[in-house]
Every structure is written in C-alpha cells, then in structure tokens.
Amino acid sequence: MKRRSLPVAAAFAATAALLLTACGGEDGSSKANDEIAGADTGKTGKSPSPAAAATDSAQRPEVELPKDVTNTFDGWKTGDAAKDAVLADASRRIDALAYAITQGDPEEPVLGFYYKDDALLGAADWVQEFVKAKKSMTGETRYFKPNVNVYEKDKATLTYCSFEGEAFVKDRQTGKAEKTPVTDNSYLLYSTRLEKSDKGVWQTAVLNSERGNDSCTP
Image (cartoon, rainbow, N blue to C red):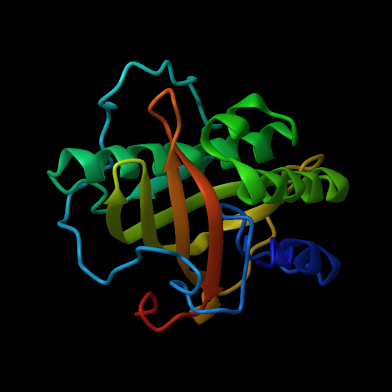
C-alpha cells in the first residue's frame, strides 16, 4: 500500500491554499474500497453529530481544537451501537490529527491512541510536513456520507466524504490563511480500515483517499 503522497507538501511549494488531505494524511490514486477487506456500499442514517460516548471503559484523551479550527460531522450517528462506536472513534481520530497539526507535534500522543501501523506512520509524517513548512491549518472541514461495515467483532471498514473548501493552510508565524477557490478537488472520498484495540478503542490501521470522487462532489 502506498502510505502517502503528501499533496500538501506540493501545495506548499506551489503556494496553493487548499488544505488538501490534511485531515487524512493520504491521497491514493486507487478507488476507495480497493484492498479494504469487508467494505460494502450500504448507507448509514442521518444525524447531526457523531456518537458522544463510547461503549467501553477506555479513558480517551481530551482533545480541544483551536477556536479557528472546526470539524463538522454530518450524519455520523446511525442508531446502531456497534457502528456508532466506530464512527465516534473515527471522528476523534480526525480531531486528533487536526490537533497535532495545530500543535506542530508529530509525536503528539493522541495520534497513537487512534492510529496504528501504516496509518500512524503516515499521520506522523503528515504533521512533520506542516512543521517543516512552518504551516498550520484553519477553517472548517465537513465530513459526510459515512458508510460503516463491522464485519468482525474487532474489525471494521469506514468510507466517508469530506469538503475542504472552507479549510486552509495557515502560516504559523503570520497567522495568514492561504485561500483558493472551491473546485471538485475540494471534495475527497476516504476509505479506512479500523481494528478494535484491547482497550476497546477503534484504531485506524489503513487510510486512503481520492480527491474529486464523483460520489462526494455535488
């Protein structure tokens, strides 16, 4: 599996403002469900936010994003306890990466709480690219169309879309956001595989993304 292609690094070089896959860390060229065991195409129900509470006793770290960074999760609650547990930890994983980027810390412990294996390496490298470029992030990213499949008691797949047209790279020193127009590339389709840890936390082990996928664009 191609771990990452670091499109944000290329965006820095071109002084483009689009945040690209900052909340995912990968931009693979394969279709979202390729090499993701157990993926299906069923649809989840709609709800305003992800599940707020986990169904286990794991002590999850508190993550508070800066006031200028917002992740919005549309329809991330299905009413099914097993699926909602996956969605809750996946949303926390997304917040964890955004937090590490804003803190400028590729070794932020919260990353290891929600990521593992190749996905963890990719996330740490992703944050490091922001650090090297002296960049952070700002704005709002919207996540929608989640599709969960818990195909074993401790294994699941999750695909979802994101809209990054209102999220931007920000200069860490000046605080200035580098804005660009919204295009189809502002929309991404993510494909992930998660595994449940001994503590009951759904950790993301595999993560791929595809920019401008028809299933996510208007």
